[in-house]
Image (tube, rainbow, N blue to C red):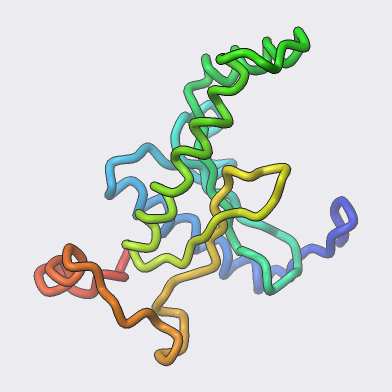
Length: 164
């Protein structure tokens, strides 16, 4: 069924995609960040990282996107400035700026946890992070050979580093 002109992925494909945000949220929470899945109970006003399943049928696109949400008070202040047509104010710029600052940290945490993540290349949502899957899902020839020292130490003590 098309939504906004995009064909929706099959239920089988979506069931696989819905497992990934839980791994993303777990990895981010282990790093000490607040994180939730879009649509979870109590996540509507939650500040922190927000994972969202992409339901389009395009298989070459990311299965999940992640963005940083500021405190609801800051978001409301930015909306107030936008409503008043004042877009060149610190309150308005803050929300987007924090999203961009957090983007690289989110990517580094996810990559360190064995999750394939990269920058969003979209002018509408430039602060988003795209998540494609787990490194363990890659064929062995395509998996990174380098394991950061902190993960090598962790994997020897706790089992595989990519077990998120």
